[in-house]
Length: 128
Image (cartoon, rainbow, N blue to C red; front, side, top):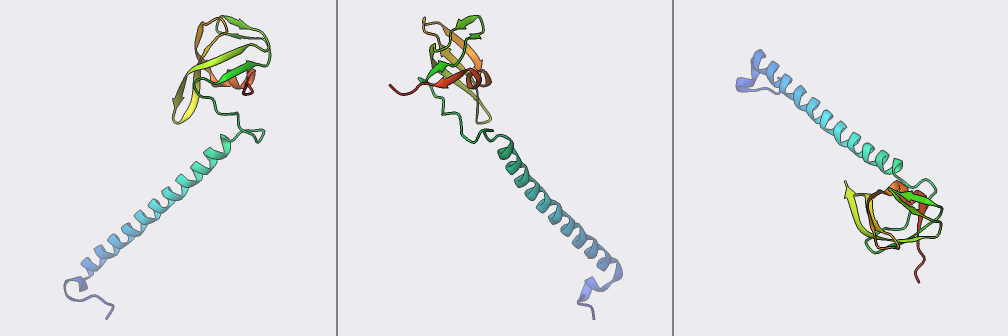
C-alpha cells in the first residue's frame, strides 16, 4: 500500500493529513524566511550606522572634556573656537547616545544638546 493503515486509509482522512502536512511546511518556510530577513535587517542596520570616515567618534561619557572646533551657539550660549566644556549628563535611546548636557566654562549647564551638534562642532579634549 501507500503507507496508510487503519483509520488513515480512507480518502477523506488522507486529504486532511496532506493539508496539515502542507500547512506545517508552509509555516516552517515562513518562519525560516522571518529569521533570515531579521538577520539581514540587523546587518543592514549595522552598515548604515557605521561611521562614514572609518574612525569612530571617541566615547563620550560624563566628565568628558570637549573643545569647540569653531565658534558655535548652543541654545542661547555663544562659544568661541577653543572653548572647553564638560559633559555632565548623557541620554540614550535604543542603545545610542542622543543628547548630552554640557557645563560651560562659566558654570552654566546647557541641557539636551543633540549629539549631531556635538560631533560636528566639538572634539574630545586631549588628556592633560
